[in-house]
Length: 157
Image (tube, rainbow, N blue to C red; front, side):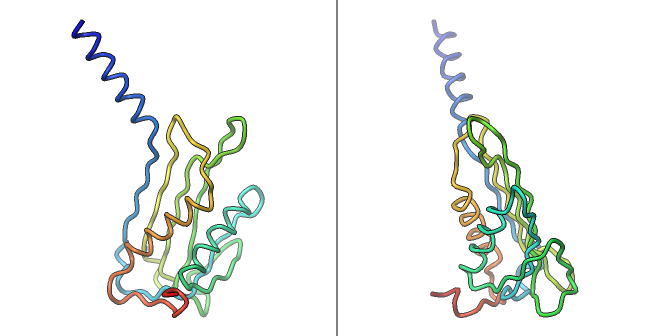
């Protein structure tokens, strides 16, 4: 009997751990030394055009002026950072966001400012991509928000 109870508890823990999403955010070596007021966002278009727009809105909510292009160059004049992302969508009755990986790089050097990764669970939900991106970008700015990181006045509103 004790074995069955232990087995049931272990099964419940395994099942519940499959219900959680994973998110990790880290500041890169350039976090403290780079202004974050202008960005070049590498957009994907096609099936990811909603993700392009969600990421642009999230950056602008932090006061960042955003240029969009299919391929950003770290040498582009007038930008502080380049922003890239990789999104994965899966099908289960409807399309849902499976994972997203966002990275901020210093424009002049290409050094990593911050990275953020979010992954849905195997027993997934159907998250709002705007909310996922907004939370991830908020956490990335918080990680890169050490003294020395500059933002425009709009970011404090």
